[in-house]
Image (cartoon, rainbow, N blue to C red; front, side, top):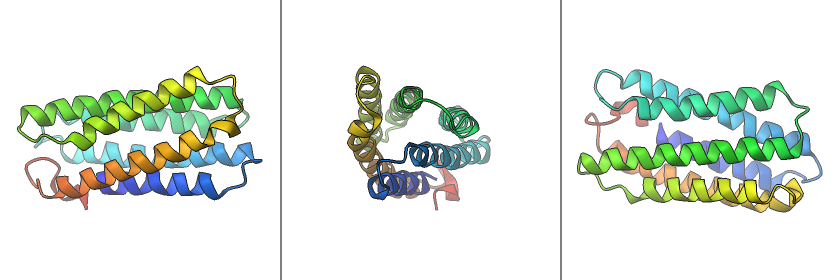
Length: 176
């Protein structure tokens, strides 16, 4: 699950990087579609691991956050660039808090996984950056979106590869 989630983030970063920046509508879809894909991955993992993992809700929360933002973003394609930046910032910040919560949970179970902590902190920092730079053009901060997608995508991907070795203790074969 985390491997796929990381790949989705990396693919979104590549899409934003390669797409012409003059098309704001494309950015809406480059955020909304991966958000819904990620929500499905997280909700599926939470449901699958509900009986064997006491803290399964930590996997459900990002699924709910990603689903809500993906549906809102795609459901209202006439949103303003400022509203999209607020949606992205809120999603990143909430996902960051959830990743830090998951990190703390794993530390209590003697799995010190620094990639999750770094992912959470970077997500919160990127979210704060977007909110504090709303007055700038959305196109002038595309580099933040691309950098976030690549960095968090890579961290999530490599965490997923390491977590695959924890089967069935944590996430079972949903990680494949």
